[in-house]
Image 1: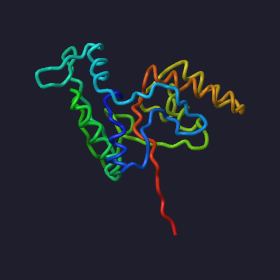
Image 2: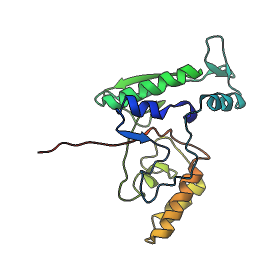
Image 3: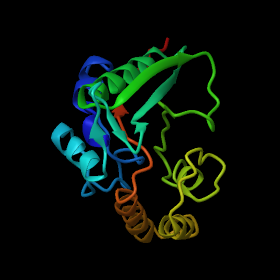
Length: 197
């Protein structure tokens, strides 16, 4: 479904152009692997892949398979209008393709018990932050229960070496492996502007 999200439109409308379409959990910098699959907006490919996986559109125009409708809720914190707007746009874009996604804003989120949500993070200094704890099997912030033995090994090795060249190679491998079994849809690298006295 990552192919069904028009990130460029979200960046231009929700972020007013203050950012870029994202494709990796690592921010732009030394460790970003720019050669990985970026899942650029391709609604036809999204639908083709769903249909190859056995999903068919029902009489209501939404995909279903074995009596189960393809539907879920994208949650966002109510006090973060940017994420609420992103969730709404993602749901609307997916609905146009036949995925019955809806958006909701909540005063608080139970991170481990929801269909989907819009979250954000930043790891500008060290790529170990928000990779090991989010993508390793059983890690503390792995709320999706993502599990990939090869990624477990790569991330464990990367956090135990100080060799920058070796670390860069390992994080490149991590990003390549991640695209084979996507745990998230990455929306935007946000340019944050701050005003201070």
